[in-house]
Image (cartoon, rainbow, N blue to C red; front, side, top):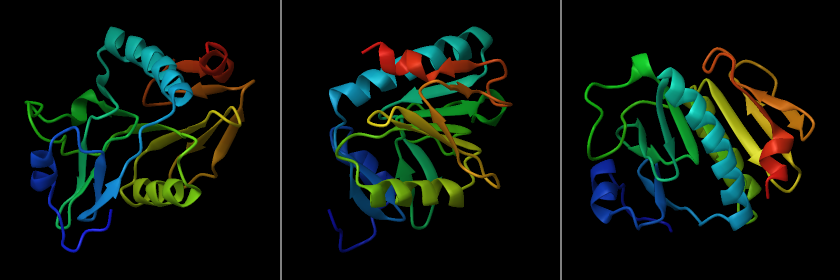
Length: 183
């Protein structure tokens, strides 16, 4: 959808959660529902990270429609497949309504068959611009993960490798075969 005027985060919020859009620098961007395979992979990843984060009280983990206000004037609101914010960066209190006004420390995006390459690149450019410390792009078709860390080359992991939580999730690992084989 192309808008003729800049939309704000407040206006997006009023539209409701059943509106499938993100807001990129004031412009509404349509978000397609994912395939069931992509969603099952997302569930596997979320379950593993959730158990790890919750047992250690490391921070906030969102899935699906959890919105983050990343930029203001013009506003940018995204809802990554998974977002994680370390505990000491969370606002107190966490807003009961609206979007979390901090960038995630970890973003996980599962590529769906309908995702266009240009859209993935646009989103990664946004994540680079706002300096998301770690982004994992999961590609179900290729059974790979691409790990993006600012200032480092992109690391591509095949299904025989594993994701590593690094400094954000110390001790966390997830074998890619496990997220793809449980389908």
